[in-house]
Length: 327
Image (cartoon, rainbow, N blue to C red; front, side):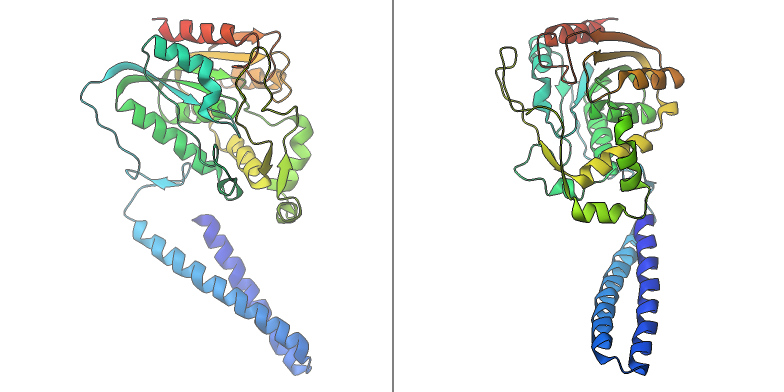
């Protein structure tokens, strides 16, 4: 809501400037320019009026506790009640532009061992269009993750988390809000790559960010086609290769919003691929050490970013199951 207040103030200032400009054009009898300014003033005034109405309606929420990280209010979340609670459940958080299907090698084993799990699909992904990703915010994914954890907690005494890529980022966010007995991070995309730092600064922290979004609304992800199959991966992987730049911005903002210093976890496991071209492992591990996270480490020598695909996926799944079942 604070962002909308800033926008409202900006529209008010612009409205005042346009009124002054309108008076000047009338005084100097520049009537064509007067018509253009008047039209722009009318447009800005309408936007100001409707945004003000929206903010006034938000005043009805003053009696509710605001949760700015998730962009929601306390108590306004999905609910689940079941009579027979399970001892342990596993929350699976998928990566950027993917779906829960990427966990299939793991979920097959969880089903076989009768271990309850919940794999929500994050807002904007798995659809036949990217329209939601064009307006997505970091808070939307943070809300998805926390709500999923709380929902599974209603059915389980303990909830462990497996977060893959951006899902690892969301897993850390949950662990900063709730105690997580077992936290498993696979190919954790906790920091952007060094070569993306300039683009990140221009998109998020500069006055020309709006210009970038206007002239470059979509970006193509680097790397090979994610839908291809091979001997080890006979099933194609559902993933967007081209995404709205807004979604990239939201992911980078998510990295800034996670409060790593507040992460609370019983035991932690970090699995990485030594050939990962998306995550810079040499930067991630120092971050985890800096926040004091006590973790086990497993590095897969022949694996890239896709931990659950390829010849070493079985090894990763086996390690995760052993970690989950360890008392």
